Image 1 (tube, rainbow, N blue to C red):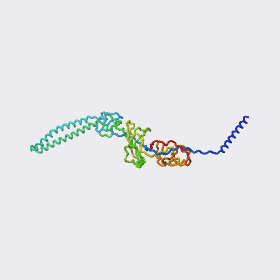
Image 2 (image 1 turned 180 degrees about the horizontal axis):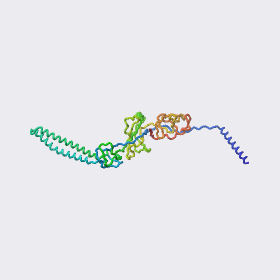
Image 3 (image 1 turned 45 degrees about the vertical axis):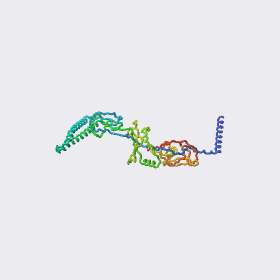
Image 4 (image 1 turned 90 degrees about the horizontal axis):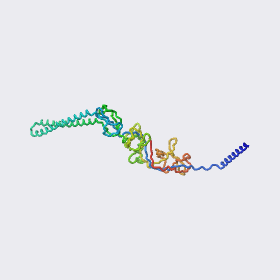
Length: 389
């Protein structure tokens, strides 16, 4: 009995299912709803154009300290790695022989100055006597000559004394520039010679500091054309530069572009640009690899399109889907220049007022009618475009 009731229940369920299917077929499919898409209306806005370039830090000033007189180092008067001032004494060379030479030159000067007085008086007396004919002319000429020789000797002695004083001063080896000094190449007791090729130490001025970056000559020509044509406006107060350090962090203080090299490197086709950065805490050290972000100018009427709206075909050609006349979808090829945050800077293909589809791209195709809804992404502040190398 139970089996019979079960079979009857199953038959009833199948009959109801077949009836429902027939009812559905009789009714037919309903109308297809109009797809809804999110759009961004293109509005020109000022865009600061920047370029990111690789570079290296370099000291603002660098000096190799070398002795200018020969002798034995008797003292080292600095700590390695310390900050020093210009004129600070770094090494003391044994001054004894140079002090003796100075004293000797000083004594010779004193002797010749003492000899100058009687020769001068004698020449003056003979000049008076020659007028009265009391002495021979030869005697007068000899007196004048002796006086002039005594004057020359005094002048030579003064020069010799000054030279001896300079050499004595050179026994105190000083720093020619302010900065940070590296390790010492000599120790007390070492013999050094005047103008030797090996430096005693190296001093580098690190505040401010240079950053040398490279850029292709083609990009530099493009920048000059854009500035000349008015496409870009020069930034106020000169070109500003920001730094991205090796660990990805951004250096807190901005720099200024100061120099553009006058020649192009033939093997690479690049030109060197030099920027100056303040470095009060000496966070930047010579030789560090950095990436410099250079402000090229401002595009007052930049056209920006969200990156999710731009697609590329197999040829790499970029295109976007627009909502055109009659709310129909159309495809348009565009030329993008560089990234601006989450957008692309579009050079060709879009005009103010175009409605670019950013949401619902997967459910539309060119030619169909859609319902356009503002995605709320069009109201943005002035942007900054970055062109990486």
